[in-house]
Length: 103
Image (cartoon, rainbow, N blue to C red):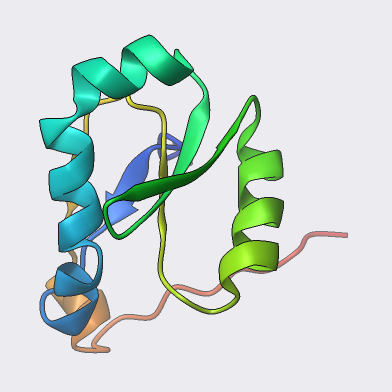
């Protein structure tokens, strides 16, 4: 199976889509400034504020969980373009996506 790029975003129509709209707009409108200030680091964006910048995605995820708990935040490198993916079959629960480990 092919792998999905790490910066791919699963966009679900409705509340989840609107949940990070502010963060995406902030990133888009401040992209050059953020690139100049943070380079190619992974940014945690909550609302219209950068709350962290990290060298690895793992570090950003750990800090986002510690700082923001269950609140939705955007984690992305400012240099990466947004990839949108819509899967109505998943949204409507016609299909499910389950992870399994192979031993």
